[in-house]
Every structure is written in structure tokens, then in C-alpha cells.
Length: 379
Ligand SMILES: Cc1cc2nc3c(=O)[nH]c(=O)nc-3n(C[C@H](O)[C@H](O)[C@H](O)COP(=O)(O)OP(=O)(O)OC[C@H]3O[C@@H](n4cnc5c(N)ncnc54)[C@H](O)[C@@H]3O)c2cc1C
Image (cartoon, rainbow, N blue to C red):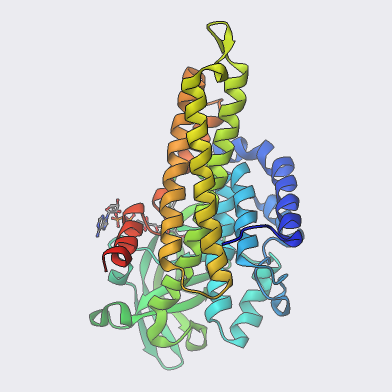
């Protein structure tokens, strides 16, 4: 597989890199410390066309590829993984599944404002007793005339508080298991939809997470996303793309941590020499650089397969698992190379380390990715 970047790919990567290094990186620590949601940055990313990058032109986007989306996310995550998480959730999950599963009317009404960055999206799948096993979801959808009445609570939802457009998964019959699941578009302000507990997190603190509470929330039947019995497919197919994107976020964090580690080892003098001269440090840097490159290639392969319309469930699981674990390893070793300075809250390494951990958890844990991979390998 050839991953040479086209002129357009290069242009998008350079544009996003320049923007992220100039506008996001300098304020990333502040956003993290204050748990501040980067509204202004999102507006500027919308003006750059990043929010609508993969959305067709007829719905206000620029019709780019998923590969380009991953390139953009990698660059944004290099600067701030919290901001990259907001983008992945709103446009990689919510907008993406409306684009893939929505009808013409739904796309015109909901996708276009998302593409233009006028509205934000959230993706509500997880519940207290349905995390790795989303088919166990207990939120109910009961048909009542031309509407469905939703009842239940979604937990940990990124952008819950800020989103205008929520994609919510609910079951119309729990005894049907995953076949009972349906997907709905629920607009902010719909009576019965409210925000519950807000969480404070270890990392990606620029992104906000909260519960979505649905209490007799009446949603017009025309807001059902995809066929009634296919809600689970809506969720899984969307997460397939999301997982490659999380791989891209992971590479961004890992590369930022490695670059910071290399810089430090060239400046830090012990035993009369910069510590980068010691072979123990050099071998570590060589190993980490190689693992980041391997992760990048897995992500690029998964993204390319998606763009070609080929199956990529296993490849995206491999990309997410490997890249997430590489991010964790590089950030942990990065702190080690910074020594005591890396342990201090004013070093850049601690944020990378805290941000990296979620890469092994959300959109399917590393263990779930192993199950997907093992099923293919063992049969
Ligand atoms: C910061 C953050 C943002 C999130 N954003 C969203 C969002 O926007 N939308 C959304 O719907 N969800 C979101 N989530 C939820 C996230 O996807 C889940 O937390 C994740 O899927 C894991 O589910 P869980 O937390 O219930 O863990 P559990 O499923 O309880 O897992 C606990 C542990 O058990 C392991 N485990 C479970 N089953 C098995 C098994 N069969 N074999 C081996 N090991 C197993 C898991 O790998 C894990 O290590 C978010 C979570 C966080 C923390």
C-alpha cells in the first residue's frame, strides 16, 4: 500500500499544522488547567474548512477524504488532544453518521450546519451498564403516534453540554438485543432532554463530558437515523471510522511527546554531556520513533481502506489498539527522559501522559480491539 501524500493532502496537513502550532499549542496548557472549552478555536477551524472536511459540498462541506481528516486530527492532537477529541466527536462521530445513514431531509437540516461549524454534535451510546457491551443499553424508545418517547441516561458523553445535535441510541425492545437498537437525532432544547452530572477528568480536559438525561423525551419519528432495526449498525460503522481517528489522535500525542523528549535530551547536560549522547537514551528514542511510524502506517492503512469503501473493521481495531498503546508508552518514557522535571506540572510531558491514557479506553477499549482482532485471526 502506497501512502504518498497528494498535493491536496500535503496542503491540508501543512495548513492545519501551521494553525495548530500557532493558535492551539500556545494555549493548550491553559485550556487543560482551566478545563476550558475552545469555542474560539472551533470557530477558526470552521473558517478553515476543517469541520466540514469530509462532508460533501452539497451539504456545506469540502468533500475531502477520511485520510485527510486523520491527517488534520493528528496535527490538532499534536497541539491539544482535548480539542482533537471535540472535533472527532462532533464531526467524526455525530456528523459522520448523519452523512452515512441520514436521509436527504436529515442531511439538509442537520449536516449542513454541522459542516459549517454553526452547530456542534454529540454521540450518545454509552450507559452506566452498557460500556464495552453497548447492546446492553437500557434507554428505551417507545413509539407513540408519529413520535418516539425516549427514557434513559447516557454517561461520559463528550460535547454533551455544548452540542446542538445529539445522536442518541435507544432500544425499542430489549429482548431483541442489538437488533432492538435504534438511532435518533435529538436537538438541544427538546423537552425531556437535559444534562446531568458533569465530569472532571484526568486528561483531554479542554473537552467536556457529561450525562445526557432523557425523561419522556418526545422525538419525531422522522428523526430516526437509518432503518429502525439498524441502530446497532449505525453505531458500529460510525465507531469503525472513529477508531482510526483515535489512532490519529494517539500519533499526534506520541509525536509531540517524542519531539519534546528529544529537545530535552539535547539540552540537558549530565556527566559533562547532553544526555542525547548516551546510547541508552539514543536506543530508546530510536525504538519510540519506529513505533510511532508503525502506528502511523496502521492508521493510514485503515483510513485508506475506508476511503476505498473496503472492509476495515479489523484494520481500524489494530490501528486504534496499537497507536493508543504507543501513545501511552511514548509519553511514559518521555517523562523518564525528562527525569524529575518531567514529573512537574509545568513540564509539557505530564499533559501528554494524562491525555494519552484515554486513547486506550474511549470508542472501544484496547481489550475490545483485541477481541475484534482475535476473532479474525483465530476465526
Ligand atoms: C473521556 C471519555 C469520553 C467518552 N466519550 C464518549 C462519547 O462521546 N459517547 C459515548 O457513547 N461514550 C463515550 N465514552 C464512553 C467510552 O466509550 C467507554 O468508557 C468505553 O467504551 C468503556 O466502557 P466502560 O467505561 O463502561 O468500561 P467497561 O466496559 O466497564 O470495561 C472495564 C474494563 O473491563 C474490560 N472488559 C470489558 N469487557 C471485557 C471482555 N469481554 N473481555 C475483556 N475485557 C473486558 C474493558 O476493556 C475495561 O478494561 C467516553 C468515555 C470517556 C472516559
